Length: 188
Image 1 (spheres, rainbow, N blue to C red):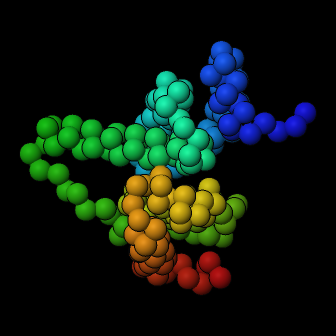
Image 2 (tube, rainbow, N blue to C red):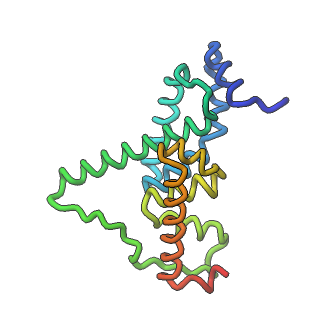
């Protein structure tokens, strides 16, 4: 059986074959979950948000014009939903507490012993997860989802030059974390 394009699947769903939407879900669930987990820093929140994203995309399929790739359109929904969730969590915390420390703690003590790790990519994923949400999101989109700077600019609704700047800053933040934790020798 030949692989159906996203556009063919969307047309089928629009024609009344709602069960075909599961193909889209299967195609994008892992990468979208990975992005959400990096941004939200919580697996349960990522799962709930991912369900919301697929529901939003499904209910908005008729507004999808196909001017951009479906993946770009969908990741934009994922990214914006994650930002909304983060803002909601922040407001909730601010209401419950009189002061909130908004500094991302990249200096907390974590036991990074690469020799005990089974998989180097797992180790690097853990490091990326320690970065602030926007840094980990852009690294995920560029390196894991293999999106171009142009596609990322559409997802994040920023200019291509801003994507390049954010990518540069994200790489620097990751490098700084590696240097700070004295992990350069272990990663070589």
